[in-house]
Structure formats: structure tokens, C-alpha cells
Image 1 (cartoon, rainbow, N blue to C red):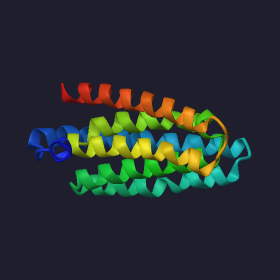
Image 2: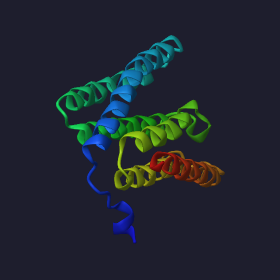
Image 3: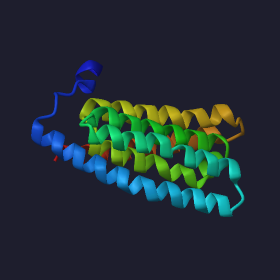
Image 4: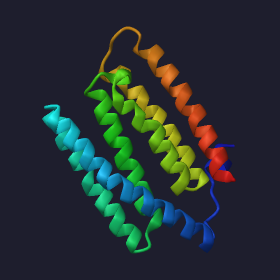
Length: 168
């Protein structure tokens, strides 16, 4: 069943153009969002976070170049992977599940639903939940596993709804 769930037929040329258009929009939105996020964290005095956020410009610019060369799938995975890495890093070094960075996870799942096929989308949703699970390991405190289970449940429901929307 897992192989069938992760299997995704190759996109048709029309689907590929559709995914490429969504990817381009996501990348064009990511650039100002990263710059604004860096500005806000910099003004707040969180310099290490600012550097981390600015470091995500590299993969986003790389994804933009890959997309221009027609490497839509690789560009999409680079974008989603870098977003997931940034979100994980931000949560692990901050207030965990009570940090505003938790809002990146539904955004990642939404973007993944728009720019990835079914198989990679399911894999990204699973990786996002594993990323959330890293928080209680990095910051062992009472109640974090409960917070993880609630966040994972909400993310799984959001992923299921995004998958339904993307299928239509």
C-alpha cells in the first residue's frame, strides 16, 4: 500500500506547466517573505535567526534558476526541503511549538500540495511531522510530547485537506 500511495504517474505536459506556474509564484512570494522576515528578526535583535533566514535565500534562488531551466521537480523539492529545514531549525532553537515559526508548517504543506505530485507530497507531509517530532527531542520539557501530538494531528488533517484540494 505504501508503494502505491507514494507512486505518482509522471505529469502530463499540461500538468507540468501548471506545476511550473505554481512553483514560480511560490518562489516569487518566498523572496520578499524571506527579506521581510530577516528585517523583522533583525530589528527584534535576533541576529542568529536573521542570518538563518537570509541563508534560505540561497536555495530559493537556486530553485528559481532550476525552474527557469525546466527542472521543475528538482526546483520544487529544493524549495520545500529548504523551507522544512528552516522551519525545523527555527522551532528547535526557539520556543518550540509556541513559537510563531510553527505557522511555516501549514504553509509548507500547502505549497507542497500545489507544486508536487501525490507521492512527493505524501513524503513531504510525513517529513514535516517527523520534523515536528524533533522538537521534544531537542528541548526536553514536560508537556512537549502532548504539544507534538496535537501539532502533528492538525498538520495531518491540513495535509489531507490540501491533498483533496490539489486533486480537484
